[in-house]
Length: 264
Image (cartoon, rainbow, N blue to C red; front, side, top):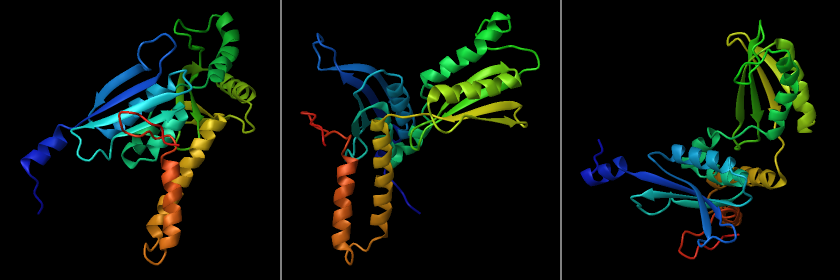
């Protein structure tokens, strides 16, 4: 049987996590940074979910997310990451307490998907079969949902479209494939138990985000390799792997100090 002091129990109970999303301030601002969103959470997953969701909705090339825990014990869970929204997602996903929150973040569907929806729905709209909310409301329609997939750990996007005629679901899949420029076509699957068509298509990502995904994969591999090594018998190998891991982990992390130096 284990016991804990009332003080430590209270600290865990009232622990809060502050998240700040910011970017370099535009020319003319007095401050060096421009804050877009600040929230307080009770769990690391919720904090990471907000950070990634909010960052993904910003049209900024350089975003900084700062996560601070209060009260602070040793500062190990505090983090400051910077880069694109994809780089931030990968950096946070590499930290175990934030990983689950990253994958459940809600990020916008790609712009070409909206264009594909408009292209397919417009002829129906001219026939007066689109409701005031912009959704196709044809008779004998079926629910259609589009799932835009990205490589792990980047979150996927889900776009519900409401009722569509089944043939239009296939037309939309073809339009998505053409507009995405991806070699893999969008697929249409009917889910009878849910009474819904689901269109699944891969989203192209930037070279920067692809590199961040590759770093995330390598970080997980290095951690697994280090865990399997004998730190005495395999000391030389362990030192080399640990050095590589440190470089990868610090790529988009920033030093937690007043001078805010970037680690590269």
